[in-house]
Length: 127
Image (cartoon, rainbow, N blue to C red; front, side, top):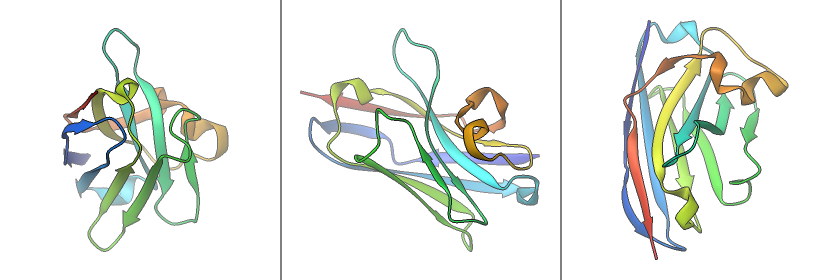
């Protein structure tokens, strides 16, 4: 099992920035990709971004491309989501998630394939 723990959520004004962190523990060798999935009020969960832990591959939803940046620190077993130029529609609970094993290409955008989940951290964007 892989345990994931998010931190860094909070309130931010429109146009501001916020950085989320996710620390992995347990059998971290079980996954080669980690990412972020969010749940907006009244919406279904949606993929935000993912990063390969052993390759130079990143994946972004169109809605955050150019504004959010995902990065990793393999030594610390952490990933980060730098959120910039945030909008009210970015208000959501952000979950750190990871598939068992590896995903590539289009599959990495499918959050339903992610088996390990954190508890989530709330991000609220106010105008």
